[in-house]
Every structure is written in structure tokens, then in C-alpha cells.
Image (cartoon, rainbow, N blue to C red; front, side):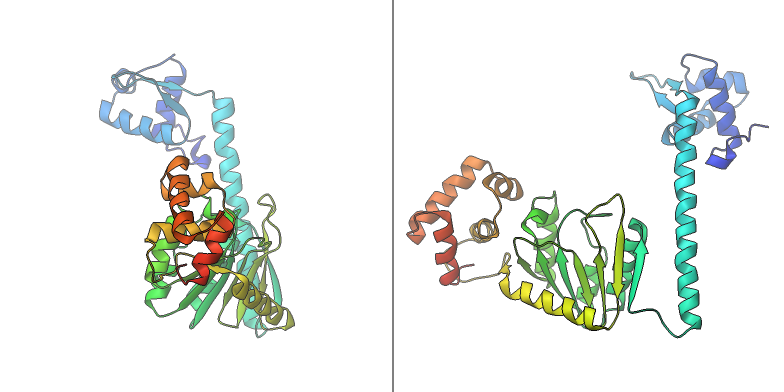
Length: 315
């Protein structure tokens, strides 16, 4: 029975197909089916699963032909993946034990440290799901899991207020600006502030989540409950909000939405190349539109253009 690789997620039949392929330089599903006395379709499905696991590679060409990948490397990679999954199970068990202990002793500490990307992601989701009135964030790269927020849209639909302050660097990440504009359309209040040094999420005035460093090789975050530290973080967020510039805010005036957004991004400190990329323009097109705005506003440079447009309420 071929079940020596079952511990790393390989089905016994698939292991038999893999062993048969190891004795050949390459083979098609039909050639292996003859040797294994089964249908070519069944072998083909097994080869597809082995390909997903990184044990075989498909050769180029119209005919389906596969070659085995050196087991010394391919199987070792599966072992490392399974070991990482088991480490995550251990980390989850530790987190569950803390929850169990907290439930038996009347709550948690004022500051709780969580470790790992998955734990950070779960806490970010939980913080938003438990918010009843508002979520406030400071957002900047890098991102531990994803740049998108899977919870915000449904929370906005449930009348939870979102106010987000973004670092200019966040707007340069692919897809982030489009996501922000979509969420603004759903009700998020977004501002941008150069020089953000921390990431932060606050639910109501009750709990906050703050990564302790921006080093993704050692992800640690603090869960902060009501305390003087939480009060200080709320005050810091309020100061940032007052200093930040509205992003893609509606305004009256002769500028269209793209021109307002371009000026907002310029005021935020993004470079020409980054702005053009976010708006889907060439740098030449972006600079031509900027020159037109200089003439419209009577501005000598882009900084003056931003100041004048802001003074007139156009951004």
C-alpha cells in the first residue's frame, strides 16, 4: 500500500501515480494508466493534484505530459508546509488557552500581546465585528495579510462609522486607492497624512489593536483595553485626523473628480509617477492636466495649486 506520504497530504493512489512517474523521464496519463491498470481520467486527476502539491510538473505542448520533480526537494517542501501548519495549530491552541483562562478569571489584561500574522488578522476582524458605533484607523504599509478589509463593507451597511487616515505610501500599493474610493462611496471618511509611523485600529472607545513593529518577520501586536494607554492612542488619532487632508472628498467647483483626486494626491506628497499609475494615466498626461490646473488656479507650482484649490473648497 502506498501511504508513506499520507502525512503530508498525498492520497495513496496519487502516491502510486507519483512512484510510477519517478521511474520515467516523462509520461502522459494514458501511459501511466496502462501500467497502473486504471482509467486515464483517474490518473489525470491524480496528476493534477500532484501538480498542485508541487510534486510533478507539466511539460509544454498540446499533449498532456508530466515529469516528476526531485522528491528530495518537493517532498521536503511539503514537510515544511505541514510543519508550519502544525505550528499555527499550536499558536491557535495557545490563544484558545488564553481565552479559556480569561473566561474563568473575569476578563483579560489591559494590554495583551498577540503573535503571528494570522492572530493579528483574526483580531482585526474581531475588533470590527464587535464595534457598535465607530472604527478609527491609521493605515500604512506593510500589510501582514492583505490590503483589503473584508469586514468594512458589511459594517458600513450596519451603520458603523469608519474614519480612516492613510499614509501616502499606502496609496502606491496596487489596488489600494481603488478600494478606498469604493469604500468612500459606501460611507467611509478617508483622509491622508504624510509621516504616519504606526498602524492602529480603534473600536468605539473600548479596544484598540496596534502592531508593535513594521517587521513582518516578527509580527507582534498589542490588544489594548480601557486604560490610560488607550486614552493616549485615541488622543493621538484625533490629532492625526485634524492634521490630515480629506481624500477624494466631494466638492463644488469646476474640477472633475479626477482633477480633485490628483490634487489631493499631490498635497499628500505622492510623486508624479505614483499618481499617474493610480489614475491610469501616463506621466505626460498627468503633467499636462497639472499645467492646465495651474492656469485655471493662477498657481506658479503644484504646492500653490493645492493650497488655492483647498482654500476655494474645491478639494
